[in-house]
Length: 409
Image 1 (cartoon, rainbow, N blue to C red):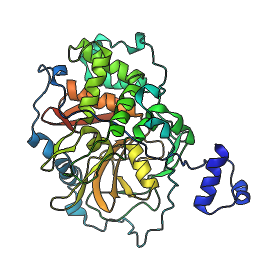
Image 2: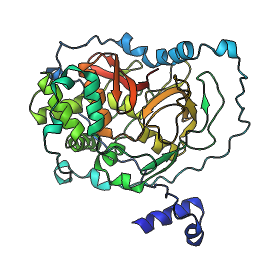
Image 3: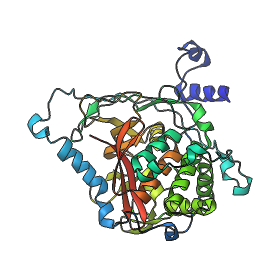
Image 4: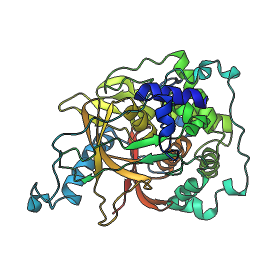
């Protein structure tokens, strides 16, 4: 397999084997596993039997609709108000012509076994419940401590420099239009990542959606199988088992694990209306895949997942344009940073501000956003690992309208 991957890379990049062997042997090989597989979905409507009214449930279309537009405005108005006094020429070099980016090869058909019937698929061994998966009273009373515990339980989180490499390029302010990144954000991603079942099953879902907001989704039986298989896979991991124990102790969900898995499937994959069209969106599509608003000026909405970014960048659909200056001076992101606020174009449409947790596992993101949805509010000021974060969680009725991290000032 390693030889095949190298061969594909050499063909894609125009190098012969001899040239390849003469290159620096310490250089990481660029991954070709970036292939999109398939997924599954259930009926519309989140199962309200699993919800309680004792927590923040003030959902409304108005509350969600303003989320990312206001976030962009907040960056413009509160963090970068100084632009009026600074002008547009404050010492930043203008990029005259951007070099052509070298995109990685995207290999298709890599996970055909995921298309098998559910009873013929193989899953990882389940993590056993233990003391580390039992929420403490302190965690049950403090959302921040519970979120940090999820970070500790993310055993599948990738290591910068070992599993992947990013190049942040140059920084910019939100209002600046110049492209401040000469190359791609991701320099490479280890082929070993494709062997992580939750990662590969997550990627199998990403091509199941129409990116244009307001377009009705057509969910096939094959895609529904992929959704069920993804939930089954992540439900065997520590973050999801901890999430279930936490929510069941709070009385929010049933103690029955199978019922809990059905709830997760409904919450993340049930279709709802967005952009004036019913059955046109879902929590999974918006948060992880992204959508393009068609009304008025086109803009990218959602799209907060690093794996989706990697795959789309590898295919040439994403143009990374630099990171947004941190709100705290002196904290410039580098290749080790795992919470990044960036600007990019997707299919030629701008996403002026987007924040993502880099290298975290799919199960971690599902767990932390689900936890904040049930236990938190629209803004959840927490600490995860070394990062003080505001986990934004907006609701559309009884659904997750959007969820994403924002680096705290």
